[in-house]
Image 1: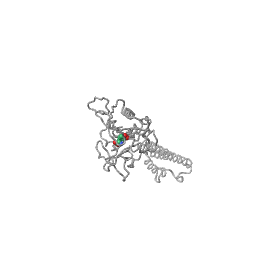
Image 2: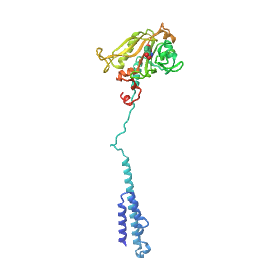
Image 3: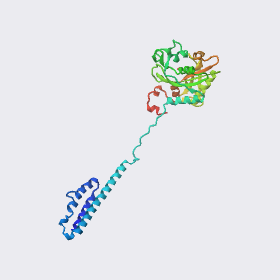
Length: 339
Ligand code: DAH
């Protein structure tokens, strides 16, 4: 009988140890401890054991039962631990997986030019002024001495909101708004968006950006204007950039001029004799017309000033060698990601 018990113990233990996973262990458990299980059926009923053997057999039967149970518990713990370890390993960092590409934002080329201009002019002691994009025609035209019959006033050239409000066609309106609220000396730039009824092509767009500049003080001369704009070109494009001033006409400046930059195949050209280079106009400028100063209540006998308005897309096209203005507005990341 002792031998039977030992065999039972060995068989049950072997069954449990053979279980390779939790499911197999559950099956083995039923075979061992279930209703028809080895241990349930195989352990002797004490009433069947002769009385003198009962103490010995009873003790042994208990040992076998405990030993098999202990074997089951150990197997269960081992398989559970292995399962957890496997799940952990599956979640572990896998250095062979391709990484997720981080796409950092880039500044738009017009933002870069805008920041350049603000840097340069704050360096010259100018501050930055703002005005509304929906502007009264008084500020956009009348106060700037733009005559009633000027084509810019025409509804075919400007976007009118209502009779006297218009999407500003130039940042020059900010000159007036600034001078109305400030006594001279005035030194401001006003970068911003402007609107014109232009058909869209490689060099025109209905919406674009200008940066206005205005300096009013005692004894301001045309030489000061040229000096500031020349220095700006050097700052923006590097030493040796060649600029030219030629006469022009604007209703709100007298005399008026335009500034052009010497531009070649490779961008800004530093060789005045390069046969492939040409002049590219980038801004209008002039001495503020005394009538404009009078319109804002400044004493035009005491104060003089200069003003300019530069096309920011033009500046960016020159700086970055962009040949189509539409690229600035299309939001194509392949373009804007290059700057
Ligand atoms: N507002 C002019 C334009 O849009 C540019 C301009 C010319 C601005 C001369 C000025 C200036 O301040 O003095 O074409």
